[in-house]
Image: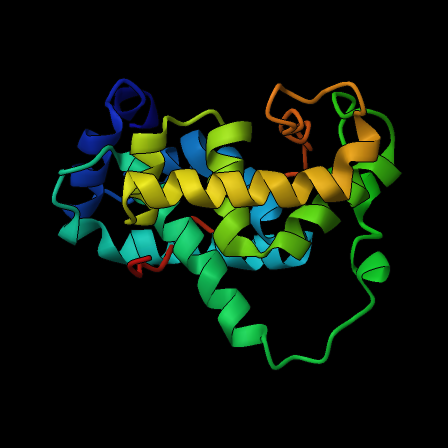
Amino acid sequence: MTGALAGLDDRELLARHAAGDRQAFGLIVERHRDRLWRVALRTLGDPDDAADAVQDALLSAYRAAGSFRGDAAVTTWLHRITVNACLDLVRRRNSRPSTPLDDELDHSDDIAGPDVLGDRETAAEILAALRKIGPEQAAPVVLVDIEGFPVAQVAEMLDIPVGTVKSRCARGRARLAALLGHLAPTGADSAGNPDPPPPVEPAKPGTDPRTTEDST
């Protein structure tokens, strides 16, 4: 049965899931979980928080599949839910006693991959910087500069105007330039903005194929 479903596109799988097919949503998760995880990790800067956000997001999407109107791509819809889950998690945990950032990011051997500038210290610095600029600025920078989504699609994902995406990216890049400029001193453009932070390949979370939806 799974083999027959594999040839369906995301919209068809989501419709099959809403109609009661118990395997369809699992295939959607397989297709998108890794990218959703990367976005959550880089937006939040902490692997445990990212795992919680992705699990919340998948549970939300699982429950809300029947209300999907098809006015956006499924990947856009899933990223919107995931970013909203990240923002909700930050709001819920704002009152939580803070832990030293270096201790929280000592999972960097689990999240750093061979494609980053160097070692686990570099990965930790990148995640720490993204966390410092906050999820509202980190999310558009991650989606546009690291994941490579067009600005217009990111505006759909975040449910904000295109101009707001551009301004948040500009502010986020400027703040990252101050925090990470020492990692790539020759990688600035003519405006003085650094190249986007290099990708950080995390370990895959063990999430359950289920999700939450909020509007950004």
